[in-house]
Image 1 (cartoon, rainbow, N blue to C red):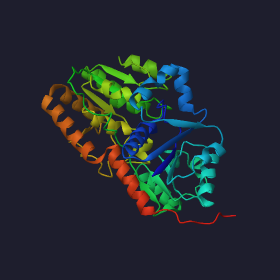
Image 2 (cartoon, helix red, strand yellow):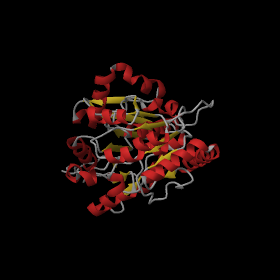
Image 3 (cartoon, one colour):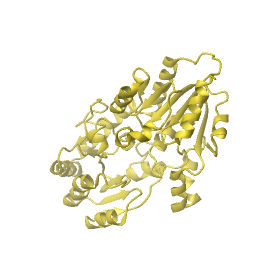
Image 4 (cartoon, one colour):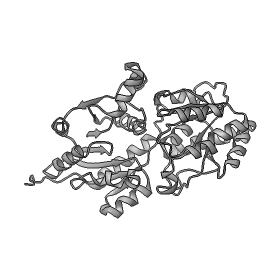
Length: 370
């Protein structure tokens, strides 16, 4: 089967978490023998920022880790549409330009013999709904939404029966415990600062608890303004800059635990959606403690796979327990790995995607719509 995916960027994971998941999914599809093609627009902001900060060496981790994947950069909608020839399944990510999204939809409506899906992995449907409504999805066969609460938004917009929950997951070919145990110490947090929408939460559930428990804290990520760096310094945290996602397992393997602090949109208006960092951390066999969020879909066994801190004081208690209780650490690692391997790998998501494709059925031969 020929599968074409229009992404914002496959090569760059700079502030672009969907690249993590997409790489794992496409790699699994390639391993199954499918003809996989990824396209990304010229001038993608993620790639441009990565090259600005790190130059071509910033792409080394991607190239070394995923030699079986590549992407084609296109400059015009006509270039992109040429890639549709012979496609069976086409997926378009929501970080593409509305003109491109509409052009591919029209190609489908005008006789395209491929199944066409729109993939939404962000909170813009609730934080900036006009940006999503700007997309002409009338030619699309369905929507892939990375959580049930997001799928419900699309259902309210008329997609009932054609929107499918498709959670992110961990690429188990990359994210796994270290083959040889290493000495572990301190906490690590891998995440981008963003627009300051969770500053208070990061202070309450990460920086202050780390300081009070005496656990050294390393922070990796991008978009940290001067005031954010000053805040990290005030709490004694060490800022280590951008981390290529392909290098995350190695970094996680040297730390005692990691912390998840969800963005406010995923606690208030899109509850139940964890970021991909949760899946990846558990797959690497590191104890995880999370700030509050509602696992409304029952993705994990809260308290067994990871610990949930309902208050900052409880976060301190959990971190102290992990620091001083090897049996607790071992239990969290074992159960977290069990759940990820059973339910939340990119292989699982490929199975789900192919099931969705089969459910929608191959498009019937149609005459082009005038």
